[in-house]
Image 1 (tube, one colour):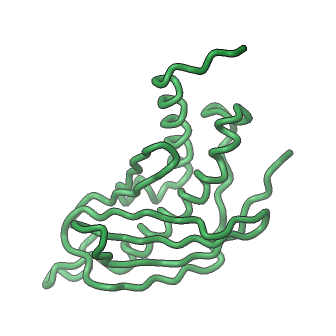
Image 2 (cartoon, one colour; image 1 turned 90 degrees about the vertical axis):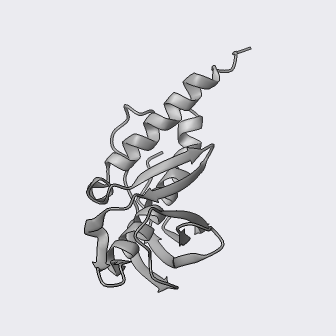
Length: 163
């Protein structure tokens, strides 16, 4: 009977896989987005940066930055959910070739209030994921998770999976 891996090894493997996945999206580095992982749950973090302010008079986050942040959170969550089972089964590792990302079909953002000049957070929930198509809902907040500043729904074309 095979002994379970030590928890530190499991965490390192999962974190390395997430970093490999995130590295496949150059816009993540441009915006400075990071991802906090707790088990299989991800929270996207957009740290405050003055260049992300669209209206300096209010000041408020640029709508395009908000949309890009939410879309990135959706794509990474969808890819992470798709990768999780294969990773846990040992079918893929952080040394595997780059993971193919889903392609956006449409993405609709609801701007609920101005994004303030501070850190923002987002969590995505996969509503449906099939072989060819997926639907994802994303919520973005800043100081209080119950007071979203934006939410979005996206539909994605799934990459073909081998084997």
